[in-house]
Image 1 (cartoon, rainbow, N blue to C red):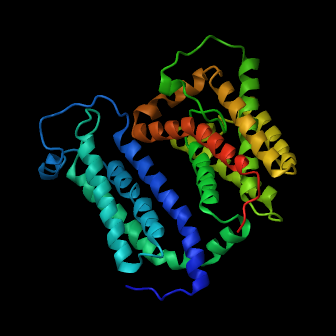
Image 2: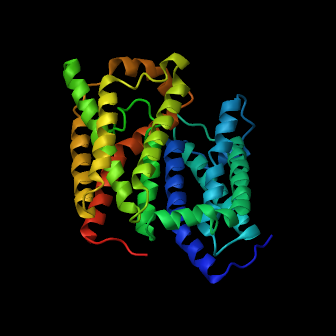
Image 3: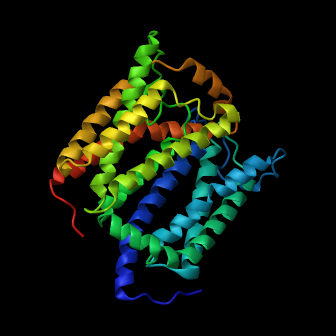
Length: 367
């Protein structure tokens, strides 16, 4: 299988777009590795080869959920690998490379799992991972000509500045959407380190205190995300409409996250009075603050992220929500819950560093 050689303009566009694909592929591999090895504790040497699982008997207890999760988890891996390799490697060569990368990743992670008492390394998991990687790679081979040099690439080039540093910002916004999949966090909150540091529950606070912190945290993070988005977009582009679409997408992800763990009547239990105030206030302030100069927007976003991160670590725990989510955290989604918690905890600090990096340049991007 071989695609026609693109002209010079298309090749340059594909090369620019592939930087975002490479960033996305690297981030996804790290996320898969963490989810596969969570909770990363209790390591012990069992005295066998780490690849002994390959010759072991077929697992006795197999569920449809586990099989589906192992297949679907590696579909993006294969797809993003093909996308990251384009345009240097294409067609059948890209498919083989993506499948090989999925195989190496799966074999290595299953070998590492054999040293974790909470995980069970199986040859069936590897086969499912390979199936998912093959499906994703095949999809990537078929879709790359349309995605790179097509309408999506033209939209990316028209709406956002060029450059790998801008692609890193877009990946950061995608991870912000991913953090909304954790229903245990406050609306739009990030940077909560209490679980990672095993901090105590803290003293009891009044409901008014909780509402105030929740409202400010939601508003501050929402304004920061809006200002970050505005710094990535080219002048004269519909940044406010794009921001509105991003907020709607984040709310849809939050509803989907609660739909997984709760009954239909509780889908909007997260929309507390504090969350409502923060959502409305954050949208209004973000829309107005987008008129500020670029460096001022970046500085304001950094200050708000720092303030919101401090406050989210002071917020009292929501006892009702913690009790409701307890079964979810101990069920099939244990690893996924740990992954979303980690990304949510680290996102604020990575975003802060990125905002400082952009502000230090003190000039509009070119290209």
